[in-house]
Length: 153
Ligand SMILES: [Zn+2]
Image (tube, rainbow, N blue to C red; front, side):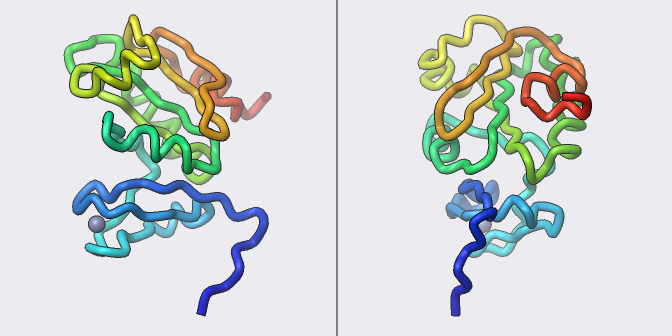
């Protein structure tokens, strides 16, 4: 038996990081560690979720919450500086914002499509459309302002 979704229910649709099965996850239940419907491994949405050329469009289009994407590369020093700040952001705002990351070296199609010229660059998407972009390593409070979830906003 399937309950009708509440009007306030907001979901993201993501591929399982272990088996690749697509799962629709209720963002209100992120703290309960939702599990993959196929392999039952956890779907971890309280940390930056790795997107790729193959998964990017579907995840962005289906997300019913704002999405923040960190475009980075492994060799980039400022990206490594920002990584713990982004981790804190993802964990603090899990459920309200979907935090993702894109390795620009391994996913050049998507990087080129969004004309990523310097890294790190943060992108914000709402309703499937890009609504903001900011280059440079940001601290937690700046990421929160960029995402529109700053405590004092
Ligand atoms: Zn799975």
